[in-house]
Length: 501
Image (cartoon, rainbow, N blue to C red):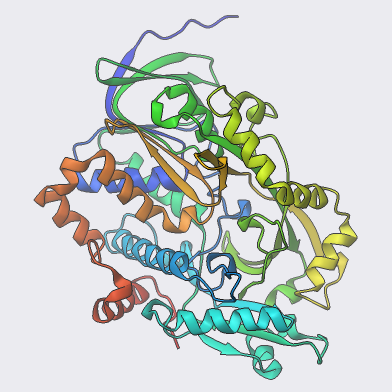
């Protein structure tokens, strides 16, 4: 039976595509700033936060740059760059302020349902890596956002910080670690679903699950968004003044469908992932930290190995990985044709150039795909010498699509991070890329609003409301000791977190 297309049209101020942490954050921000704004939300799956925002799909941590070594690259002369780490640490403080506002205004449930204190530890071994970590620590001490970080090369001290990691380790091995007690674990899936639950209760907001966006076309100053109800087959058009494409890996094809000049030349390189999940409660109970190491040569940033304590669905979990892989899908629930269908005349050169410039990454991914269970256990035992195969099982993680963009010098470059693409008229924006995305969602969405809602953001009304939601708005925390101490004290109390030592 063929279903007829629905001829009904609806006009909204905003259309949000994708029910992940980015759309949820933008939706709540806009409703708080302008209560009468109308929003239509479309999600292709039947639940919110089922892709990259879900805790099992890699985003279940608080990327604050306390322990992630890939945010502080080492240069050829041995020096360490800290600018990226400082930027991410500051963005995470912005996120905590916004989440505190949500808690204080009963817009989400108790903070324990989505954020908990967990020490963030960087751990390395070998003379060269120890020298790197020592230099990293010394450089970060120059910035107040990293106040409270501790460094040690003493195996006895490290045993107190991470007993499982140090158990039965070679006593002659040179080791070092840094530790931040004010690190956190964030369940972005839980946080996202709570924000959408709040949004759905607000006047002027409609949420549509099992709705796939098929076409995007700008006409007479409005975007015509053609959507299909995958459950019934019905199709309809929604007109909107502004469209946000926050569909994770699915953003790339939708950006291409929009046809905006700013979206041309972008490509996507998908990277899949897997975790080893501990199923032995006794082992899980003995580890209480996020322990990050150094990535292998050629490894993408999201594949930095870590032994990760998390809280998922109210239970303590222990994961190791992620192990990277390759799939042509742009989403965990996507199609094998996602990558081939994304290749267009305007992006084929950047994609080929980026591929040729990143042959070590290709080799790394091939080796990861070919790994046996024994190979995975060998990697785990570098962090957990006493690991037993029967205590761990393989869990599929989410998809990440790294951004490929045009570059005059190289033709195309592979970007690791997030990229906000906006039309010149500010009527549409798309978020591309991956880590540290979720942890910096609030800062990213504020930047988006400054581009696409420029006049409103500059108004006294919005400025006042933004400052109420994010007290540090317009200020650099990394340069303001008094403000940083006050804000951290407030967010720590509101979110029931542990203060720095």
